[in-house]
Image 1: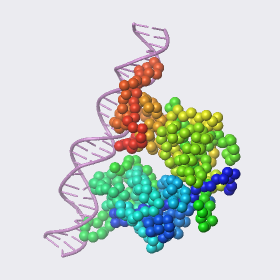
Image 2: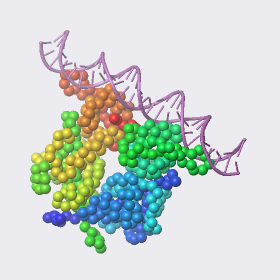
Image 3: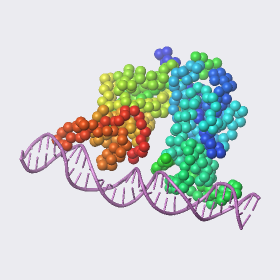
Image 4: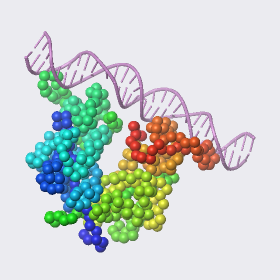
Length: 223
Length: 223
DNA sequence: TATAATTAGTGTTGACTATACAATAACTAT
DNA sequence: ATAGTTATTGTATAGTCAACACTAATTATA
């Protein structure tokens, strides 16, 4: 591919904000940088997007390689977020980053430099990755408000308390138990199963399942 | 800027979906292509994004040059939409396009090849620009539902009928007059002025103004 | 100067939704 | 049997949504 003008494209990169909820805490996957720039800081998994490669494919390749996370199998919800393009965001030169958000559960990372951090106690971040994470978190809150996307954080069968905990972890605030249950059940996104969950010296909880693991918009939203 | 690997970036382009509402019709600005590919088809204003240039700056430069529309002064609301990146979207080679949506009113275009088209009677479109316009329209509907972004389509002072017409043009359906007025006034985004608007053989209408021309989120939404 | 034509402006009711709030049920460990 | 822990459930009040039709103010014209 050639141009008659001396056109030079900016570098194109992709970055992923990978969320999971563990023990009632919303977490983000980060990698400790082993090289300059920002050596020692933590960064989102990301890298260069070559010509002929979609951003999704680049992301798949990069996260697989750098964190052993497979975005197609480990993540149950993936969405493109925003493209960050300020000229000085990478000290090495103009790099435009197409960012994605992904959600999963019980994600195992083998790389010793990769680690999940609670959203409210993030370490020193490289580049503009703090802004990217904040943007992703806002979007995630919005998504959970008007879609069934929570399914991505939960096992196939789950209790209503787990469901509520997940919402609370993402929203960063507590919800009323009775109102939450009434409302969520009225949305008809989940159904009861005949299984119960026993977990300690207390009443066992009914297990529920989502009717569909596909993204659906709600008729009305939370909050 | 150099890489030690033989990295080649895709071409980076920007495209803008520029909306206005005229005579109760939502319109999109298009350019008739004078060159291959897609010669004779209509396309969104757009072009190459060079290294060292933000996507916003590229858009500003390109729309100014190709359509004489100045996105900073002619448009009262501009937002980045989505980045389209499929490998075959441009027959000349892999081009990743960062797309924007912009809204204004009474936009004058000098270029004889540039023209506004009603959203529901678009001509033959180049590239994937049909999908981009559809995406932008969806987003615009959502924005008007939960923000005060309509202000971008209206003059400083306007009647409630004009306001309702604008919503109807964007939503593509009629709204109940009494409910619309009640609800919109209850949002406290606009205030009455002491002026009225006379326009034909009928009762004159009160003119209103927005309290703020900055984007604000609504406490509750339409629809 | 009355009448027709046209758009502006206004309220009520019933259904549904949101919020605030506390007691009982079911299980395990001691 | 009792204590401890989590699960489960209902009501009342306020607020919001959706459906629906007439009067007010102006101009043109008969």
